[in-house]
Image (cartoon, rainbow, N blue to C red; front, side, top):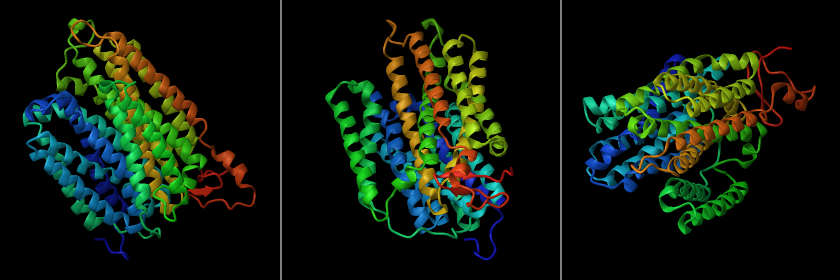
Length: 491
């Protein structure tokens, strides 16, 4: 472990964090295009194999804020290594799974890896020079989204050259390497938050997320008006209300409700929810659209590899734009960057809805989508981390990532219900289903742009802070009343 007196250069720390986040992000989507292959190999059914995705989503949603909270108290580097070890163990179990039950258990263990994002954000804030924090956080946030897109691109070649088991072997190798590097090169947290983990709020958080995501993931199969789905939605509402009440009264809350009420926090979380709905729905349904045989009147009959390549432009532009999003936020403000990014993302969804008869149109739309998402993720993550006290960095950023995941399941569920609402005699969805679905995602991102306008501006928060608030030093990010960030701009 790095010495406390001689800190590791922040460039080395960033390289280790980036490798770990990339491994986790790839596992989010690597299995999506090959669920059919896994279903056949493990001798299971279509409804059961979807739990390979659902179990991972549920686990990540639960463990992301929990691991962030533990990291804030016990030390981010230490918990980061533990999280990597859990991710590697889950990948190992998934790689050798011989039945779907073991595979699902493995995916639950992998979900613990959701803690890498809040822990990485916290480590960056602890270790990096002030002027480097925003850019580094933006790159890590963009990398998490880029990895999710690249997973779909890489799945086909890996399966064709090797087999689907290597979708887990390769991330496992990378994760072990990242864990070892983190142990030796990432410094331990200089600051800790006192208290303990409140397990009752953790159980209640788990319960309402399970109810919500289970209803969303199974609604199309069970029926949106069925007693089971309606009961799960009702249970999610009741348990969420109970969770908020318990968290508000807990001596050491898992999620500080006062923090969540800060304007800069809840507005960014709302944008994350809506943005996640659009992004993950596209990642889930674009491969299905292009793999549809052209005899259906649309689609290209693409292979797994070809359908993944259509999403490659989004990963490229997302990463490239994310590299300078932080600097752009310093020039025009993070709120403005988030607003512009949401509008660009909305435009890409409308392109997909109304111009999808040629492959070049899809390449253009996904490239535009990546640019928009790259702007938003980088700027939004910087705003969230800078808007809360340093000790709460892990929890705040973890909840933001968690809400994005929840939004993804909401968007995928809505897209599924629209796409499958009307089918051809062959059983394939009609083209209108995809058109309406992509158009709805465009509207959702337009709403996200509206939500971005609610994010407090620097000027507004300076008026709130009043003339007696000291100005931050050059390069420093300061928190003022209302939870807004004051940057280093001189006026």
